[in-house]
Length: 157
Image 1 (cartoon, rainbow, N blue to C red):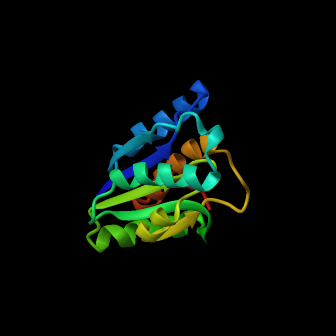
Image 2 (image 1 turned 90 degrees about the vertical axis):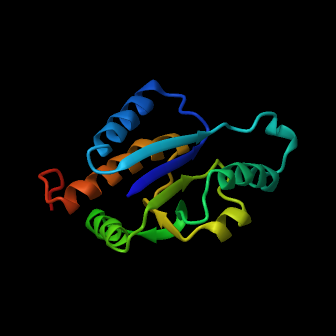
Image 3 (image 1 turned 180 degrees about the vertical axis):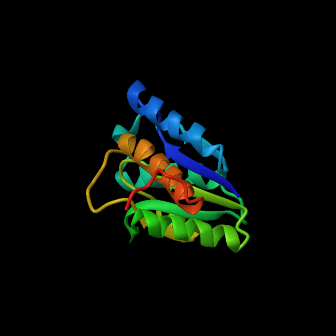
């Protein structure tokens, strides 16, 4: 199964980027994993939040294929424990899903078009994290899920 993480905007912290890259490299052992970064919009002061979400959404939608399983990482999504997330991934694999695309939106969330295209929404926590911090948190959780699926000694419960 191929897994993609779509992000809006670059990481400004080299430490966050290094941590994200570390888990992305570890994931290659389990799945074809890649990260697509959509450039942040420029000159947004004259745009409303809705206009920004619409413009970012158009860029996100350009990276999606009709057969992709699209999962938004969204504060209103369903929360799963790490073992539940692993079971969710495993069910997708067993169902023959070829490509899962996880999407982290911009600072104002997703446009209605992106919500309509999405198949599911997941939340990483009830806490609010910066868009920068979601990157290493999510890649670590995805890595953790694959180690749980394989029964490896990474996750302790």
